[in-house]
Length: 281
Image (cartoon, rainbow, N blue to C red):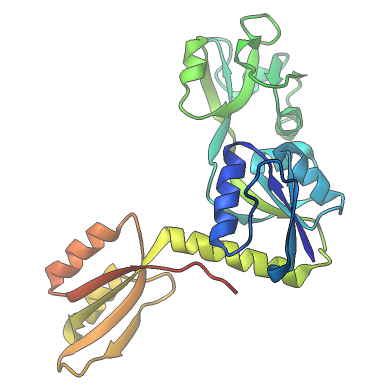
């Protein structure tokens, strides 16, 4: 049975649970439930603190887990990212009072407050920058005002919290993070892990693309398929109606309206857009 860790709280947890449910797995209904066995799919879920998941997977206690890329790298655990999940995206950056620093080179000799000490130390070491890393749990924005640090390194979403503290970001992002599936090296349940990856990949595809069907004149097929190249390649089938062919292709949801307008401009007929069902293999 595949043993998989799932975040037990927060937005990362909510999005992971929704994705697993869409992939056809049984998910918990009670937030107090810590272990759930999905016997039909031969998988056991453990609801754990997001920060601890990579450690459990890296130690070999669990086969795989869903966590943030930032938490995986910060942990230093012997686990690796095997699939990007496309949710909980965030940017990890340095910030300070204006004039204190403008680039990573200016961090030398500075005190840097962060909740991700492992991630920041690794980032500085890669650039041979010597600075003091001050580990804090929770919000770090006030550490500069209180004299604990010169610079902070933290997740930045809208930047409102930083501006309220009179701080500005500088330099290149340390990391762009998102929810990821992680696994231990040489998993003993490799076949079952591949099934999990396929199912989650199916959900990602279903969220990203729709299926589009339409009829187009034969002489316009090359122009039409340039508009709808598909995820791999479109399917073109002959029709009884002379001079027309049927085309089926997966197209991005975000570009769907533009694509439809271009197809109508070519004289396409019977355009039909259908949601793609997530893979249940």
